[in-house]
Image (cartoon, rainbow, N blue to C red):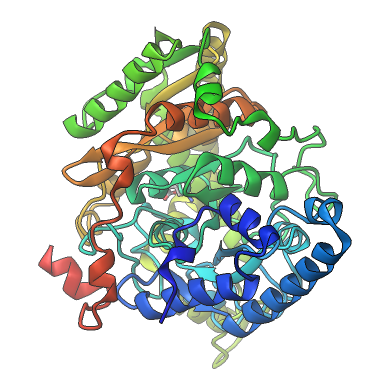
Length: 525
Ligand code: GLN
């Protein structure tokens, strides 16, 4: 019988329980693996679970805990933050000796030759990687339906998407399979699925986290970040992965603040952080396409922040409308270059029945899915000789304007608050035949990547029984302030009734006759 109580704990509660000897890392990992193995079929959050490696790591963590307990309180306090805590990695984080497919058939059979820097840092901090989570192929998508391995469902409604592209990580955290997970966010892929699954997720400033060993999508936009069920846990995981890495020249040498120390434990202290803070509500984010239920929850959150002492300021980001077009020129252009390496010779899937060109065409023709092919075609076109200035260079100019909008707003306010996603989770299949409708899922998150800024999504209530996310956007390198606002919002909404609700379809996950997500679920919706 799986112990459900252990899986309901937050990561920081696990860390203190482990130190106190309330339970062992092995019990913790067994509980999480047991739940994931028993309930993942209808969810499909995981592409694989490495139970053997996870249990071995748990036993090593228990040995370290026992040793520290013998040595005394000082040794226990000196143990690393994640020791014994289970977590998941998005399937584009390369780990030594394990598969990473980035949700693509073209990487089928690829085995990681080394650990990504963030994976190595997580292991050094004692974190136990239990497996890799499902994702849209090469992180292109907003629903996890573009995974070559089939979609993931949303634990709040198994007929709906979890968001994407990091939908597996978000769903796994929401379904209590793990307290923490890693995602990547190129245009919203951490924040949007966090919002749709009712968990917290953060995209740090561009350059805050190393991408060495992360399978690339769009190099001037991609950032790695954490998922968790509260802001303190989010900060702990960010702390572990953040900071300069000599293997990634785009990672920043700026010192990483002690995020945990800046986040008060007590709700009163956390709420007090809001006093005198100026928060901007960008007018353009409350536009057509925003569901009334989402708008209502976000405005209520703004009102709550105001009653707690923040000043809410109306601001304008006039180039917001160009965000989508700008992103969908730059991201595919960079993707077309990054994906050129999948040639059937160096990685994974390989068709070898003809000459070099025939093999190349057959490998890419059968290895990439339709959305990836669409992006490669778009990107190649935007970069081609006759169109480069008209599209790519133009998009870079628009990017500068979008960034300037944020710079101007941050002269007046300390941070921005906005919806994360214009809608709650949509039914499986609903946007699969309309790429632009799918692209619009990220209209509130894309500009933040275009400008390279940190952004957070925290749950702020429900609309029609489905989670809504509040987005907090900060100045570059001000993750600490963004986290503080998220923590303060948690504090002032701690007593809200919706906080006590669990994802509504958890019982269906326990039912062995619930079908796996996919065509059946999509057509039923
Ligand atoms: N949905 C956006 C896209 O498809 C963003 C994806 C992401 O952040 N990786 O490109």
